[in-house]
Length: 273
Image (cartoon, rainbow, N blue to C red):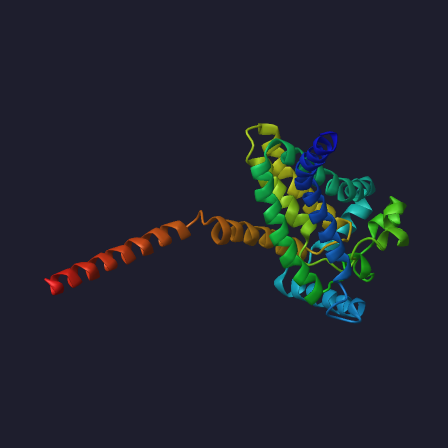
């Protein structure tokens, strides 16, 4: 009896832990896919990434919003303390806030957590294809236009070569840093607390300036990241939940199909009689 009781206890414990371990495995697995897929398409992806960076710069110049060097130059010359603020904002306002909000949502509203987790996964899969097919060197690597503010002004540990081994420096387009911030801004805007709603607007705005003034992303990266999150929401709603115009079309098609079937049956019954 003791062994049976122990077996059922372990079985119950495994059932309780499995959903939590699955979520952890998703995060860890996604990280390793992100790290080890970067050289699958281009053998010399560093040179390709630098060439793509110059293409993005030329495109922004042609379109007329190559503003990042102006923003960064003004901040360095006129408000160096602001540069240091954005350096820290770039580091501590992304993963700490994202992970904290995800954990809170996971334990307080599991359905909403799964909804936004799926949006993150959809955007991640699409972004991963972008990172592989269009590796892009960040602005801080283009020395004739930009300064690596984190390397120049600190914190020096974040700019170290050892830390660089744990992320893909050429995964700039689209900017998940900005895109996921937009997603969390939407989460915050959907709350009932006015201060959290305000933060939902302030957070993506702060991130936009943090990623550009520090020289980690181009404006085009942010635009692509924002569009990616919108596309992920639409994919979730239209393709998975069908809560936009698809239900109306589906109901209309079923009604038409049912009406046509009824007419055929009616015609057949008249013919038989």
